[in-house]
Amino acid sequence: MKGKEKPHTGMNVNEGAVIKEPGSAKENKTGTWRTFRPVISDKCAGCGICTWYCPENCIKIVEKDGKKRAVIDYDYCKGCLICVNECPTKAATAKKEGE
Amino acid sequence: MAKDVISGAQAVAEAVKMCNPAVIAAYPITPQTHIAEGLAQMLANGEFDAEMVRVESEQSSMAACIGASSMGVRAYTATASQGLALMHEMLFAASGMRLPIVMSVANRSLNSPLSIWNDQQDSFASRDAGWVQLYVEDAQEAFDTHVQAFKIAEEIRLPVMVCLDGFVITHTYEPVDIPSNELIGKFLPKIKPKDNLNPSKPITLGGVGAPEHYIFFRKQQQDAMEKAHDAIQKANIEYSSAIGRKHGDGLIDTANMKDAKHAIITIGSVAGTIRPLLEKENMGLIRVRSLRPFPAEEIRNACRGLESVGVLEKDISIGANGAIYDEVRSALYSEDNKPRVSGFIAGLGGRDITEEHIGETFKKIREGKEGTEWLS
Image (cartoon, rainbow over all chains, first blue to last red):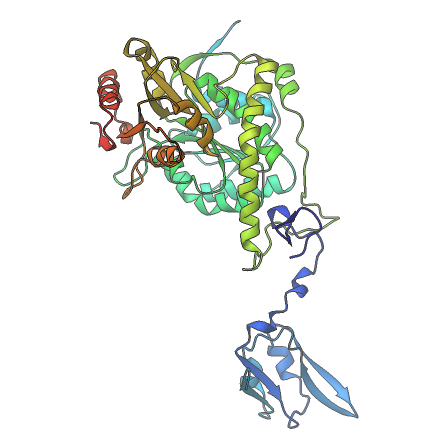
């Protein structure tokens, strides 16, 4: 939550926790909350089922060299692993963060 | 000066009407009901114009005030006891979002056992909610303080609770001077909204405070509460020059302190019972008018040179002491020659505090025994 007025002990916060510009939730990169990281292997058929289930809307189907494939935005993926559960080809698997 | 003989509740309703809130949201509860009822009657008579929201609970009445105040208009509600307890969650939302809402609390004890009668446990239990809390002695001060409350709230952007003893003030008829609209208008300017909701420029109020930010919001509220200290004194002075009446220095009100070696510290209407007894007993009186911010410095100054003081209060922080007793002792701790402090818990659940009780209290204050006693 960044603010432009009333600097306070080196930290700028707006009185009343006011957010003056819409869309600021994007600044909060929730990917740091993850314990497990979903990883997509080459088995991915690009069916897009994971994109429907992802509660954070952070999986996109990207076409590269004529092949469709799921790509995860790790800035916002919280590691809920619903994609791992739903993937019909078992292309999405869970890895512990830091391993 | 012609005065109206009206109840404290009517005096509050008259004051609120003259401050022109755009939204009033209230739910009935004894002994507050007459305030909201009085305002509804004035609206029905066309005496002023406001949106009266008839809500289903006190949690909703505060939520409605938060919504209205977020739009940048004056919002007002009144409650007591269980109603205040029910809106506890919303009290923090209002103060955290820095909304200048004004609320009357017609002080009443809390269940169980069920009691509709007066003490101050209800608002004392809310003293950490980030609201300014002002306590009044009589109907006239209730009127004056409500007008001041809007000014204080809007200046420092904190909500203000004006606490008046249930029945003792709300239901008692007293002569009250009601100044003209012109004089009130001279004292209280129109509200100047800040960061209000507006569909053409969307903003969020009270966003998420992650661990790295949250503490700074609370520090801002604490800083604002320190400004409230000056704002309360200033409002008292400005009200006095516009209307011609003031109440102590705004934060505390003292009587018979000259040459006194002992003093009684109290809050609210019981000061009225104490006043006539002061002179012949050579006892000083310090009436706390503002509980939040707590006037520690003013109390230190008033107590300087005294041998002993006693705190008489209608609340108990169960497991500790009366709240003012502990705060007075904390305020005096840094003093070199501090007076001894006795504490007296009295009047809970509407039990009368009689002149005999006060006499007994005076005697014990002179003896200077520290600790808390219960008067029955």
